[in-house]
Length: 363
Image: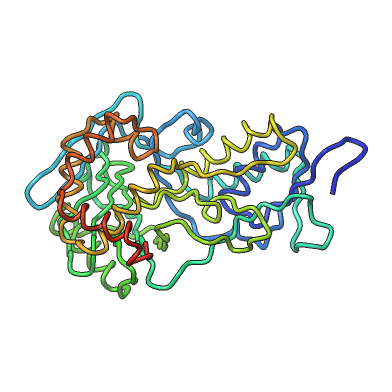
C-alpha cells in the first residue's frame, strides 16, 4: 500500500526483536518509508549479553555498550594466545538495553506498533521471525551465569573468548568468560553440536570452571541466560516475505555471531534504499565466506575433538586486529590465506569433497 499524499512506501516489520527494532530505530534515515512493527511482545524476552568487535557500523551500539576489552584470549589445555588491539576492542551490550534504546528511537521516529498482522499490511513485509531449521542441523547452544564474587579475583582487562579446558565429550565445547569488573563476570558454557545437552552439563561446566580455573567458590548468581543458535543458511519462515535478521541469513554460520551482522545488514538496507523504491535485503556475508563456513561447520561436526587445535592455531597466525576483522566479516585475502594455511589439511579436504559431491547436505 502506498501513501499517495506523501508518496511513501509502507513497510511492515514482523516481530520486535533485534533486527526489526534496529531497522525501526533508524527510520529517520529512510524518509521515503513508513514503518509498522507487528509486535507480539518479543521485545520482552530474556536478557542476554551480546558481544561484538567495534566496527564502523556499530557506532550506536558502542555508545551504550556495557564494557569493552582491548585484550582477549583463546586457551587450550596446553596453549594460550593473547590478542591486543587498539582499533577494534571487543565489546558487550545487554540485549534489553539495546532493545529499549531502539524502541525509544522508533517511537521518536513515528514508527507504528500493532499487535497483529492485518490484511492491510504494507506493500513490503520484512519478516524477522526465526527461520525453519532442519532436523539434525548444527547448533550453537549455551547457558551462562552472571556472577558476583565475594573478592577481587578476575582480571577485568582481558576477555576470554574461548577456553577449551572443559569437557569435550559431546562436541566442541568452550567457556566464554567476560569479566565486567574484578568481581562481576559472565561465564558461559557453549557447545557446538546437533543436539542440546542435559541442563546439568552446562551447569557443571560453569561451576567446575569457576572452581578449578578461576579458583572462585564463593559467588552469587545474579542472573542466568541460555540460548540456541542454528548454524547455516536456512529456508525463510514464509517465502512470501523478505527475511531479515536470522530469517534473512544474517547470523554468521561458522561462529553464531548475530548482533554485529544484523547491524551490518541493516546498514546495507539503508544504503541501498537510495537506489530503489523497495527496501533491498541482502546477506551481510559474501558467497566466499558462506562457502568456507560450510566447510568449517562440516569439519566441526565430523571432527569435534580437533576444534581446540584449529582455533588456537588460527589465533596464533593472526594479530588482534586481523582476528577481530576476520570474525566481523571484514578480512582481506591475506588474512584468509593465513587462516587457511593454519588449518589441518586432511579434514578440510574431506569436508570439501563431501560438499562438492552433495553426499551430505546438512550444515
